[in-house]
Image (tube, rainbow, N blue to C red; front, side, top):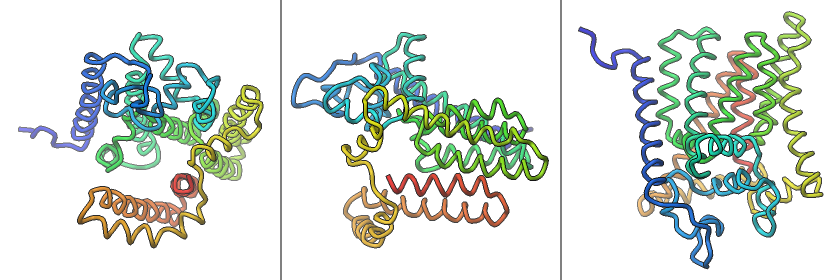
Amino acid sequence: MRRPLASSKDRAIFITAISVLFTLGSSYWYAGRASFQPARSHTAFLHGVVSSIKQLPPLARWDTVWYFLIAQSGYTQSGKHGISTPGFFPGYPMIIRLISTLTSIDLFTSAIVAAVLGYLLSQYLLYAFLKENGSTREEACRSVVALACFPTAFLLQSGYSESWFLAFSLGAFLQIRRHSYGLAAICALLAGITRPHATILALALLCEGYHQFKAIKRRLAWVPGLSTLLGLGGFQLYLTLVTHDRLAYFHSKQAGGWNSSLTHVVAEFPERFKNAFALILVNPWGLSVFLEYIVAAGILASGISLWRRKKIPESLLLLGCVALSYAG
């Protein structure tokens, strides 16, 4: 008799389903027990957008508010919100607005639903990409389980754009390897309007395009990488037209204190690591910072391993995105 969850495929489906049901269930419960009320007092939360944190789904926190404001009224806000919103890309807010329009649910809950859909799509595309590139079904399913169980995987179901950027990136790589350059270009273009990490994706896709052009003389192999740059450039052009500031994105990051430099991060590393280690016994936050560096070391080792196995585009994407994230 076959045991339940005996195969990697069964475990992958089960773990993914449980995590998604938990996220959607908690979001539905919050949506039913509290209605969204704009902030009107000094006790406001989330940069003065709501008056009570209890009004929002548990995974709609921090930067979710900026995606909410963009989905609500674009980049036309005034004051503090008008300064901050240009620091966030429009791809994910467009999906939030579409889901809210189609389902009539509030924008914060729509943000969670959108993230969950992006997470499910990215899981499927990860499985398909690995199968297309020589992995067995067992290995591909194990990778899906590993992604679902990764310590920070909850961010893929939170009100952030990571799940859709991952889905668009995987879609672009999957289609360019299939020589479906039109679909790859569409995925790359959408990634370009979703996160700034698309700059790294563009380099990785251009590297893949170079390899394909050199090996099989496919001139269209350059198109996906160029489409990513088109998405990035189109967003910057739109911000220029709306805000009359050619560097609106960078000024927004500077005003919000979100920008840094990789050399600054590297210089601070020994002191931050020492402080995090000292805090472990007295503060759970110290443990989270400590684990952050352990995870980063694991990702660095994976990137180096991919490079040594001649998986240059994948290695570029992995290492580049981590470096860009730490640089702010």
